[in-house]
Image (cartoon, rainbow, N blue to C red):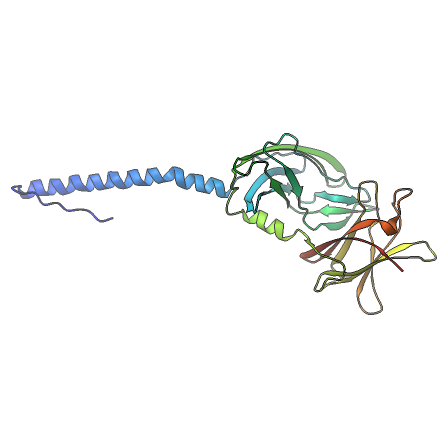
Length: 304
């Protein structure tokens, strides 16, 4: 800081020194005032950059809401779930014995629609059966379309889910977070990383890896089965999950094989199909996970 030096006419040396000290004190007071005046603005910026709810701590976990930067007309956010080591929770389609999370946003204000964006899951052994979900901390992103983009969004979430160690236990959390109309910029790293793990939407036959080359319904001696050929970088780590159009469907987890041309092939029996449903005419959802990359395809089966 530059100290102003004033000269006083008709002043002795002592008077000049006293004047300089007085000026110095004035400058220090001015600098302190400017610094204090800047604090609210700096604090507001920091809060906006990390806009999060309080933690809720049901058994085996801790949960909170996190706001992110705007995405076009949408406000982004995430549900952060921290798991106690050794515990796990479930994906939207939990597999043989899991329980899917249930999101109730009905208490929210200025919300037209909320879309939950699921990170790619993993398969795990539940002791005699297999389930689908997350074995580590996870952030489940979501996109909010406000009714009025110029007003804040008031998020109110009642979350019912299950967490498991050796046995599964129900858990619930009630979370609140008010998000300004322009969100929280920039998005926190945890939300950015979570969005990167959400499967990319594509089509059957798309180029690159990972990709689903074909999905066919085949007849065999043991009954009909679904065969999915995939392009993956690491067949040993690749996995596939197949969902029906609603909760009445409970398709099994596929086995992984190697086709005659070296391609990775996933095979699952036609089981868990609702009575009267025509699987050949039904659009299924295929989620192909290949290491830290994943794709998602909605398509009907082609007969063979």
